[in-house]
Length: 111
Image 1 (cartoon, rainbow, N blue to C red):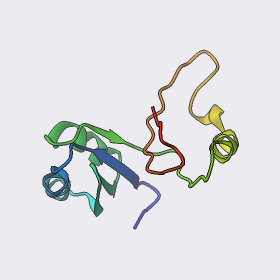
Image 2: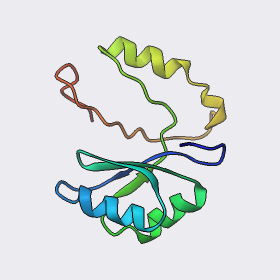
Image 3: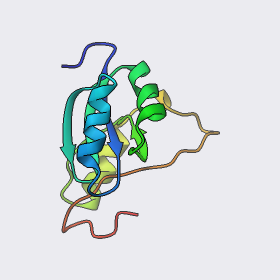
Image 4: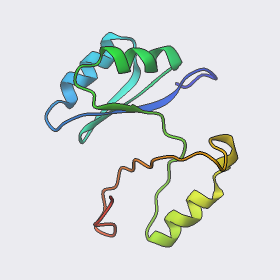
């Protein structure tokens, strides 16, 4: 369950290490831990996000999603991304990176 101070996160990992990472996350207090392909989703607060970055040996990175949606084609991706209020996250003089998780026969090149 998410409270006002907790939010969903994703810990990315290498193939075959998902179970180990899930145990690491549970060990530091993560809730709603679910294993996926090369990732483990969980919920927690900001302190847990820091703990996960420091203590999870099998995590490649910890992501805090700002937008989640399903799209059937490239146009739907652009439409959903345009709906986000980007001013909440960055100003015109800043840059950012996009880290996407894509699994689809429609989108064959996700980099």
